[in-house]
Image (cartoon, rainbow, N blue to C red; front, side, top):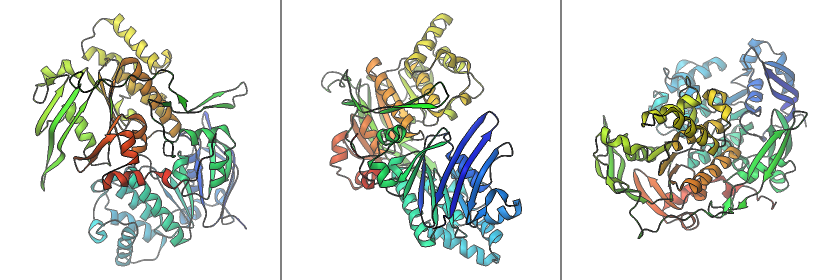
Length: 564
């Protein structure tokens, strides 16, 4: 059978960087192929080459055949006719892919009228039908909305509607669920699979998480460093992965069904270093028992909580009236304890964290830090207390000043909080850098010069440099590759053990919270709907919403991983 898509000896090079090396792939009609690997492995470059959207500086060699046509030989005019019609692509970040000044309808209608001979009225009706197809509620009304008026999951649905508007034969989905809630993630992938069957499409699914694609893909190709390391039917790769890197990706995914907790086991990690020829040598460490048990948090009877919230409410004014983003929340965090806070986007998690930090004023309730009521303290009174509570953000790139070196970023934190002696600041900076596993040479570099995992280590260093008692971790691993995620979680456990830290760990992913937390609170609609220890929440959920979060974890329907 002639493949729908055939890639032969594809090489993609940018000035100073060889992105893809001698890649060979085939994709049959109506098949789903998952292209898996860490950020920078060449997945997106391959997708953009297929769409002929690489920048002019890119050098592309090899064969890209679609339906027998050589895509690299097509004229720009012929490629434009094919792009968005027979071949379509869903991009990773819908907010930057959708035009913010055009309504959803205008963008959908533009796609339809470019590729199909439709009147304006017929195109608008077809656009409404497409929004309904991807389950946008009230499509006839929402068609005139703008991207900023939709949730992240809804924006991704609109991107899918645009991509399938002309019933393409090949749909490329580039990380279509990254940083989405696990429930939304499951809905998006179910939608893509349904549309694949309805339209008889082939799907090239690009992701970094083998645990995610196990239930959706027919075949899996694993990439690293621009090369394909392994390719196999999904079931076979899950049961008998041959390459150590593939085994590492499977091992590091918390989405796969395994009973791991930070007090009993260290997460497996993938390590790779270049050999004398420049080729990567992979080393995969299995899950290891903790040699030095992490001290348990102090019992409730022994001391007052480090942080205590009682009936806290935070309200936002809107044109429709006041909205209770946080609605009557009460909990404690003790020294050395990790409390997990899990829930979907919009449930109030981040608002709660900002309220604790007093970046937002609580509307009601009481917040106590180390026994002191901080609910209504003025900024001057709060300032000396802030060094005891620090925060690690979801997006380290967005939270680090791109114009400052790492040394300047860390040094300014110490200056703001009254560490004036230069020798002390320098010693503190070097010590903190060592703790988070970054070399001294990193101090003179800038945020854009680091990988995502390295930037997150810098964010952790910034939080730790003041030696806080409590660190609020707001989605610190949600946008990271699964292998980097494992390294960051292990690092947080190491730092907790070394410094006796308490964590408030915020995430939408219950499988991550299950591993890192002692006690878990499930948040929905601004309220806590359930709480308990990590094991009980996972094994015996009492609330329907908690059960929905667990059911959305891809491990529930992935092939069984063979024992190592």
